[in-house]
Length: 78
Image (cartoon, rainbow, N blue to C red; front, side, top):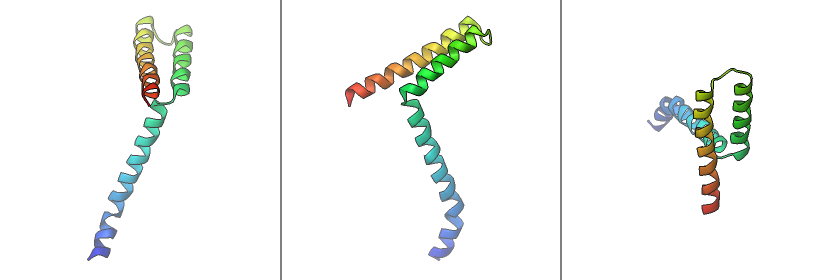
């Protein structure tokens, strides 16, 4: 009975494993100051190349700066 359960649950376990790995990768990227700074530089470049307007630039810059501030605050609290 347990063998059949293992066989039937294997696809679900694989999906859960993949979801956990994706979540870890997202958390690592979101807590990496370098990635946030690269995002800010890319955003600046898009603005200078007129790919986005000033309103979009300001909105996305605020999001990235808040995220960067949260990362730094979290590192100080550790």
